[in-house]
Amino acid sequence: MNIYLIIILAIIVIEYFLGLLVEKLNIKNASDALPQEFEGFYDAEKYKLSQEYLKENTNFSLLKDTIFTIITIIFILIGGFNFVDNLARDFTKGPIITGLIFTGMIIFGAQILGLPFSAYHTFAIEAKYGFNKTTIRTFILDIIKAFILTAIIGSAILSAVFWFFQAAGNLAWVYCWIAITIFQLFLLFIAPVVIMPLFNKFIPLEEGELKTAIENYAKEQNFVLKGIFKMDASKRSTKSNAFFTGFGRFRRIALFDTLIAKHTTDELASVLAHEIGHYKKKHFIKGMLLSIITTGIMLFILSFFIKNPGLFAAFKMQNLSIYASLFFFGFLYSPINLFFSIFANVISRKHEYEADVFAVSTYRKPEAFIVALKKLTVDNLSNLTPHPLKVFLDYSHPPVLKRIEAIKKFS
Image (cartoon, rainbow, N blue to C red):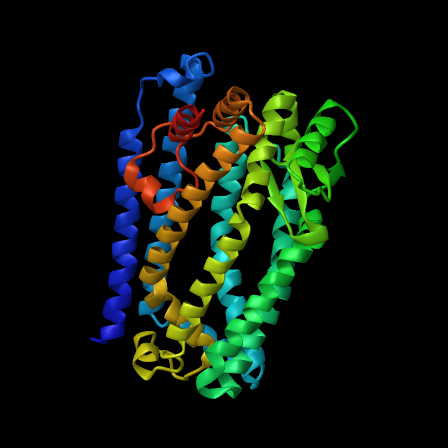
């Protein structure tokens, strides 16, 4: 039996059972007893609802993972990739266009397969727990917009990758790395003003107490605001959040309208101080550098597997190609990607603690920030007691109780 096939199937099965173990431990770790810190914020009924939300979401996710894992294994074993490749080659003989058609068919097939799960999660589970505000029209338009954007951006990146690996020899991975990095930086600048407005409206925050408080705080921190916006998140969900995005004159702070409706001025200003803390501590730059480095490592390793005959034999492929090499390498790279993901999450959780400290030390109202964190947790029915293994593998933010504990210790 092909050694690559054995390794790939082993990776798929091990990752599936690792995910199964982590999620089962996470559900088991959910406590029926409300943590003392949240008394007065969660009543018994709503806390029970949060536990049910966790379990239903987890079980649904595991069902989806099980179906996708089985289909993936069957697709590999019956030579599904070869069937798609032959179909793509029937359209054209050019390697780049053929590669884009091959990639498009695989991605489109995966999206079609995932569509019923996405619809059920949105219109059944999220609606059951009072979160969903998405209409069928918005749901369909989101899918169409995302597909068009993916096609445009993905085609540009993949065409460059295909061409470099075809024409640039041993240094192809370096040229790909440079091209992808430039494109990533370009997207960071244009996303806030071109891409994100395609999905949500960003309305400048109106004059008033909140805007004045934020502007005064920003001036005190020598932080030049390029815009404070209210985002119409309520057209999709009742969940709340805030974020900071963009660089230079394109950077902006966005508050979900659902967030503004549920918090006081001091609470909102504290949340914004946390976001500004990320900028002041250069967390965005550090995160981007980490992403650039890991992309370079991935492309370097990929260069050793381009048109590998043994790898293609594992997928029952009749023809070697650069574009299919990317897909097949993805299966082998998965464990390395998991390692980088864990490392990135460790760094991210450290950055969240640092931004929390920045917020409470500069805005100087720790209790308001703690209340904001509690309200966000309750409004989103977040899990208060995740299992440590789940946190280690998947959490980019520390659990809320750990954050509150750290804020109180610092204060």
